[in-house]
Image (cartoon, rainbow, N blue to C red; front, side):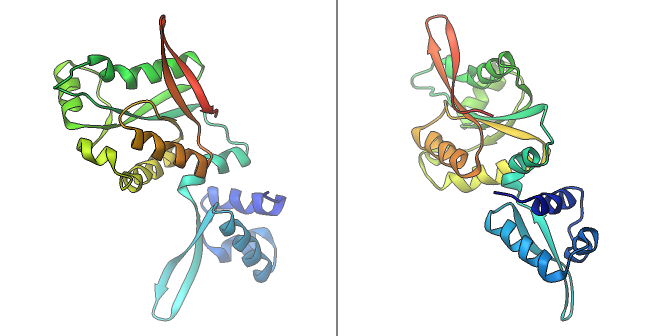
Length: 218
């Protein structure tokens, strides 16, 4: 639960007030009271403390929003997102070629658009053969993050996904697609969705095409 005071502090940080002294001044509260509220927001992982300036033994303390909870903070502040980034994946096996796997990023985007979610960017984790095949077949370019197939079978990939996610969330909210690539990739995305309250869906193939199955809606 976030209190009204904490919401005001989050709003100040969102507007660019990163220095604790400035937040204290804007809030008109005591230094101890502000530090208490900041500590509570830290415990909820909504903000992160950092040193803004350090000259010798003098430090200027500051705070910033946790990039992985920016979508949640925007909701708390009543700042709805109109545009979304789709985070998905793509693979293609030259030994058992099936070009339908190449279509999944576009299928996911199309289904989201039909559900009234405007996707302006698609971030795609992809294997080298899939990227080469997409280029050869002149698929539209995406924001590719390329890894060998073995990487998508390792839970070490989680840190790579989180790094990309942090950058994407700075721009707008994201929606995760756990359909493509490996089971490990899907498990990692599902775990991230749980931890950071992110929307995530699965694409189901039907006799008439495809449909979205939401695990967690936006």
